[in-house]
Image 1 (cartoon, rainbow, N blue to C red):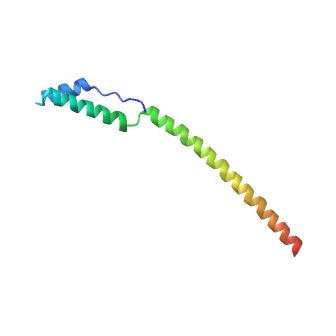
Image 2: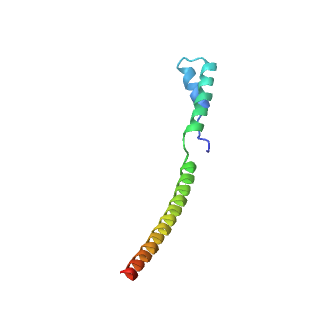
Image 3: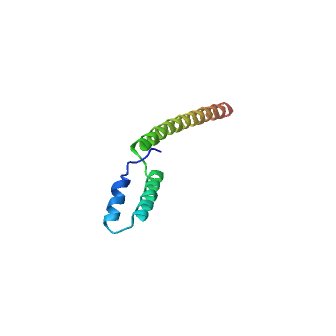
Length: 86
């Protein structure tokens, strides 16, 4: 997963201006950066997922087509056998 841009300096500055101690603000910025990078999807992540999903859908379509074709062949065989028997 790609990194998301997060301005830690501005984040720390805003927290310290609001009264938080700088070491605490820096620790919070590191934690926020880690959470953002580990949990948010980027546009590239979504594009990669879309490509994988399209590939899987094509594969599934092919398997379903083969299965349907096989069922049709078997059904024709059964009908042909019944016609000969009757």
